[in-house]
Amino acid sequence: MARHVAILGTRGYPSYYGGFETLVRTLAPYLADTGWDVSVYSRPGATVDDDPARDLRIQSIVSRGLDTQSLSTLSFGATSALSTVRRRPDVALIMNVANGFWLPFLRAARIPTVVNVDGIEWEREKWGANARRAFRLGAKLTATHGTSLIFDSVGIADRWQTGFGRDGTTIAYGGTVPGVLDVPLGLTSGKYALLVSRFVPENTVDEFLEAASVIAEKHDVVLVGSSGYGGELDAKAEKLAAENTRVRWLGHVHDDQQLFALWRHAGAYFHGHSVGGTNPALVQAMACGAPTVARDTVFNREVLGDNAVFVPPTAPEIAAAVTALLEAPTVQQRLGAGAEERARHHYSWDSICEQYDTLLRRHLPREITGPRISAVGSGTTPRSHTVRTRVTADRPAVGAPTATAL
Image (cartoon, rainbow, N blue to C red; front, side, top):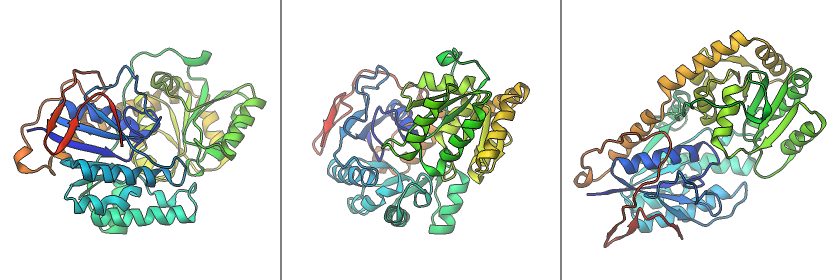
């Protein structure tokens, strides 16, 4: 008997926005390979519907909401949760504690929920006081009503045990180890500094932009990312790139291969994230062998081990560490090789996806658990497949290749 999982809380499938979206692009086909019917709730215009790598077995359900920085997660989460109650999957996989507000409805409908709590959202500097209170309340509701919780690092698990008295399963993010990649954009391998980040204060972007003006006196600097909504940090990056020929601001890069190549050939990648557990960009940078200078946090040390230079979040310290690494090719090679090996051992997509599959199965009714189908060749890049559509009396067709609108 087929089993159905609904995935809520991301920008959809296939989407290239951030870490959750990368996880879903990889996990959804893996689950389909192992016998699941998979539905992913998507936001209008956030998915690449003509993506040649799109797996046609995954049903994309377009939800509605308000696309603003403060209300998007809550509003899209509300409509997705109500649709999930109506469609009644066997289990729901939910991303982000902001969706904790809607867990009571899913619980009342007796739909088991597995919630990836993400980072400590209520401590992020980008949110105002009201948003922080909302995330904190969402976390409390998640602790009360979520059937199972997923933490992406030991540090996050400790925070939830201490703050909310909840245990869960620790599952990190995966990374894709790329093949041979050419040096991108006419740069010189090992000779440029790289930032890949969402432009928000807690990612130490402002401090790195200040450091970049010093680094660029001798070395090229490449900036990848934006706030998504404009603002002071975007304007500062634009001004820096306009005034300094050694600085390039690329904005958000949708092409994975170009981004992988930037990491692969960087002489120093700066990772300034301060709030959260296992950061997806950091894991992918490690898989690409990027020599890393990281903000010194318990989370970054947990992921990187000894394979990075750790610095406090000040522009002079960042500039000094990045410049020193750019001028030390032997250290670059050691840190990059160590990071890649650590990513292969601890953060492979096959292992990550298998852990999600196992956890989701624990919540299935006994009569539909069924044998596990081998997911040979999955867990790397999603693939196109023959569509398998199943219709029952109480559920719409699942697995059709079209995007369904709510």
